[in-house]
Image (tube, rainbow, N blue to C red; front, side):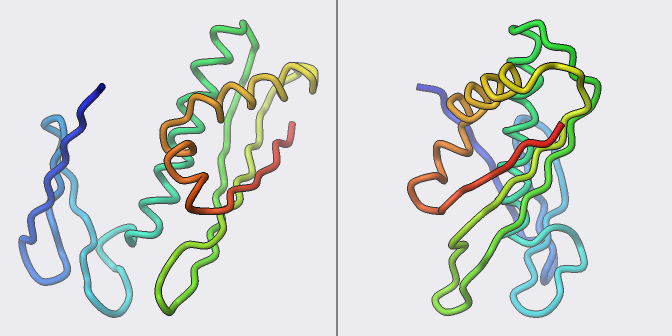
Length: 133
């Protein structure tokens, strides 16, 4: 079992310093109002899904020897306010490639199957998506 550690420390009201693997980044931790320092916690969850899909698309396209010239991932989330929860997430993966659709569908099957974030979220949040070429 792999172990991941992350630490977040409030450095001033609404602003935290997050550290993992020796990498530091500022995080928006404002309790109310607009998130002006960075992504909101919900956006961080969305970013995690987008990044994980992008990592896996790159990894499996290389293994499958598929020429992918560009990858764009857009995530849309729908959040309930009370009690707060993301209820649904949609992804749109846009690939710049001339690879046939059948191989892209197989690529996405692997990208989702081996996505840590997708597998973590899928039982708690409805996740649907599309791939366009």
